[in-house]
Structure formats: structure tokens, C-alpha cells
Length: 329
Image (tube, rainbow, N blue to C red; front, side, top):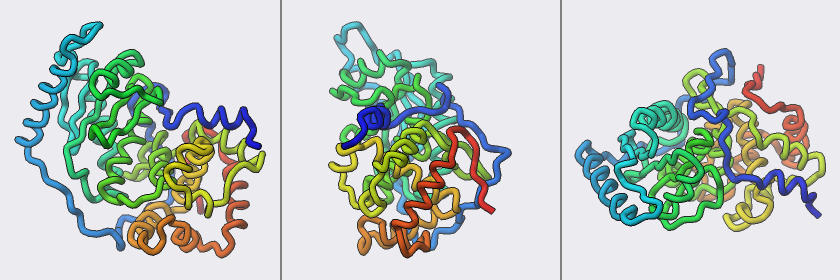
């Protein structure tokens, strides 16, 4: 039987912001991490859809018109004029803060993350222009999610809706969730067969992140104490079980443990300088290794994955929550 307090702790949120309430990124300028591979021997040539300035301009005008129509007659009154729209390729960023604030989010968080995610993982942009909606507080987030998308958010932070082609955020909680959710449309465009453990593991890795040697780098975050508690109580499944979980099982059965385990597996690979290499090889070989387990075993060089899990658990128990980068000689 699972320990109730542990499940409750780990399930508080699917995604969370860990940037101290700010969309600005903590830079690890003094940290020295293993260099990630700069070449992608497995990746296909980029198939980036090219949208012109005119395409983006038309999209913004359509977005303004649709927003006006959806908000007409809303109570309490809300109008499209309250929103600023900023083009930040491959997205359009809309927000109900000042234009300056929306522009800052677009440049300091969206562009920052997109540049680095593309550098290491995603050569291709999403095939459509996607919208990022940044609502200024909880009330605005819940109100406009309902008015604009007919949604009742299941998380207080934000989510990605492939149906609406939009990332929908309560930006007052910070930028961590935004970077997490930016991973998903890029994964959808570049690796549509990616299993949920890697999709969410990579997304949650960057809930707390910074720049190390020009590359995006995840730091330990709020998921760590709960995972350590799960390890101590022997509630963490094998990596073969984790990687085999389908979407229903991953998101509905002990999702807090699943997210945390996937995140800190990606964190371990990152700290060993193996994350990008793993992603590239798994993407290339996914048809013969749907879960990624065999590729993981190969990249790690581990014949006995149960023994590796014991080693990984000891590693995780030695981590501390914060911004420090583990240096591997």
C-alpha cells in the first residue's frame, strides 16, 4: 500500500514553477558541467516549417478578432484590448500584463528556452503557429481558460493544449511551468512517438534551469524530497516498468512518483553528459525500442538495470534541492 502522505506530496502539482516567482532564469555562470554533444549523428535534417512575417501578422489579427468575439458580453467584463500580442517565433505570446512585461516574458523566457532546446534536441519547429497565453494571476488564468478555451484547469500553473494549439499559463507562478510546457509542442513536432516518461521527464527537468556553457541545464527542484521519500519507502518502480508505462498509467497511477523518477533519470543522464546522446539514439531507434529501455541500457552501459537502479537511488539520495550542478570528473 502506498504511503498516503507521500502520494499527496508528490501529486500536489503536475508541473510547477521553481524560479522564485519570476520568469527570469537563474544562470549557472560559475558552474562547470559536462559538455553535451554538439553534433547529432542520428537526427534527420531539419524540416522546419517556414512562416513569413505576413503569416504571423495575419495570425495575430485573427487571434485578436477571435479573442474579441469570445470575450464579448463576458461578466465581469473583459476585452481583447486588455491583451498585448508579441511575435516570438515560432510562437505568438499574448498576455494581459503591460506590453513591456509581455515582451520581457517573450524574450527572457520563451526565446531563451527555444534557442537552447533547439540547439540540443529539436531541429524542427512546430508545424503550425502556436499561441502562448500568459495570464497575470490565478483569477485571470481561471477566467480566461474558461472563456477562451472552455477549459477548467486541473493545475494552478499552466498546461499545453494540442486541441487549441496553445500553451495556457498563470504567469504569476513564474516561468518554470512555461519552459516545461514549451518542451511538449517541440517534442510533438520532432518525436511524436516519444513515450510519456521521456516527454514529461525532459519537460520537468527544465522546470528549474539555467544556462551552462550556452546549453540549457536542469537543476534539482521541488520534486526531489518526495522522490527521496519514495526511494526510502521502496515505492519507486523499476526503470523497465517506468519506461513501459502508457499515457493512462503514467498520468493516472502514482503520477507524482512517475514524474519525479522520470525527471531525475533525465537529470542523472544530464550530469553524466549522456542526455543528448540518449535522446538522439532513442529517437533514431524508436521503432525497434518503443519504450527506450534498451537504448537507455545501452547508453548507460549497464548490463544489470536492477543494480543500476540501486546505484541511481543512492545518487538521488545524495542530492540536495537547489541550483548546484553536480560535477563529474
